[in-house]
Amino acid sequence: MLKQVAEGVLVRQSEFLQSNAVVVQGRTGVLLVDPGIEASEMAALANDLRELGQSVVAGFSTHPHWDHLLWHAELSEAPRYGTARCAAAIRDLLSKADWNAQVAEALPPEIAEEISLDRFGLVTGLPADTAQIPWDGPEIRIIEHQAHAPGHAALLIEERGVLVAGDMLSDVLIPFLDLDAPDPIEDYLAALRLIEGVADDVGVLVPGHGSVGGADQVRARIKQDRAYVHALRDGGDAGDPRLRPTAQNGGWLPGVHEWQLESLAGRRERDGAPG
Ligand SMILES: [Zn+2]
Image 1 (cartoon, rainbow, N blue to C red):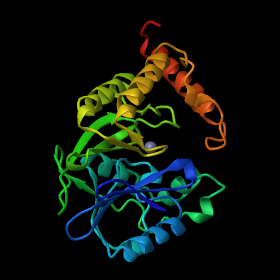
Image 2: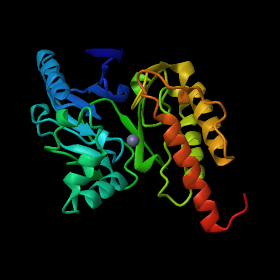
Image 3: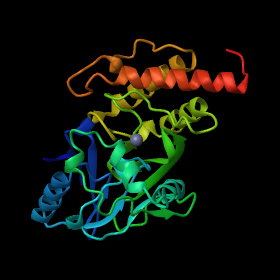
Image 4: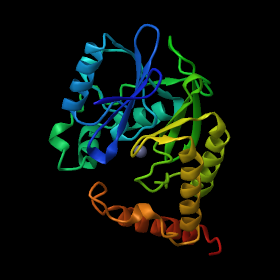
């Protein structure tokens, strides 16, 4: 199930939304980014790693959404990191007496029973502007931006030419904007520009959900995401191919798109801005 995508970088894809867990080989063990969804999948991953003679020495969550914050006891008690903003958002959630119920409500009913909230969100925030993940392995640059979720981070493993994009640059999901942010459209466009700035260093692109892509996919998906965000800003959908129903997306993406359009229109009305 673990697939090598570059030297020392492996990906395990979950059935749910084609979620990608990323394993990076370090000197004394592996770093695990966004470990997976169902408890049994993470147990299987722990088992696969054991068979490879590897232990998890660090974890990283790209952003504070439930499907990137799960964990399994068999993956070890290694420190799990996120950006300071990511950790603050999780702290906010976990400080609520009913956080468990709030998260449970967000889970897709068809797999809710397979998901364990044991060790959910136990993420240590790295100091603001930390440039690299602190661990004993290839340098991993943290490219933090404000799009999709507070403190969202893409990771660039420069020596391996791998970009772990978190929930950006997916070939199966449209951009989901952080509609609670003051300027979600401009935030998203700025994030795409930031990622574009490292595009020349990327040979392999691993999105949080969807297919792993080669070098050509980085700019292609930036272009596609930018076109979608422009269309959203202008009140349309630009015929985005990802809005077509498929067996994987269950046909619910047009609903997300409509909801994003309505939220942005409502916001413009409230702000009294033209158009
Ligand atoms: Zn997300």
